[in-house]
Image (cartoon, rainbow, N blue to C red; front, side, top):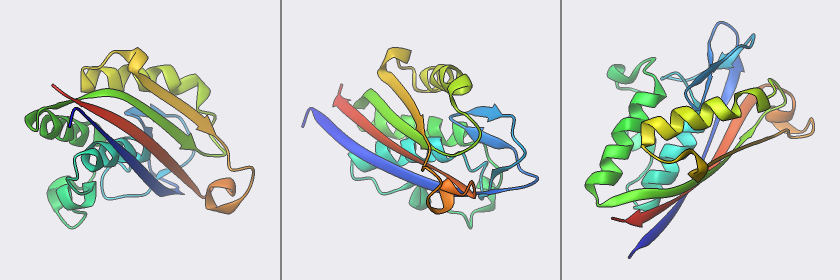
Length: 159
């Protein structure tokens, strides 16, 4: 099969005394995402989409939260591992489309930096990476600014 598509989703609770990482960018904010790793929900959604495209499970199977070697690890390091897995299976990323859902902070000032970092890690032209952001209009935990959720779609192509 020359093309495979995967979707990914992640959500993390916003808490005090944590850095906010999204797409490998440290975003100045009074709260960060709670998780075993750095809780970068955008990278987690992208990794799940990459793994899902090849029916390789999810990030919880590859990087379990009861494994202390992943405690506070940067998700960018995990993304490098997942990219190698995809490469070893004979696939490369054609493009990524992702959405960050949050009320605050505003994501627009960081979108280009996120695309740059993802481009560098994945060795992918920046014009193949779309990062969008939106609010939940005050509804649910995201709308109440209690959490940030991210969705990603990744198209892989056979090398």
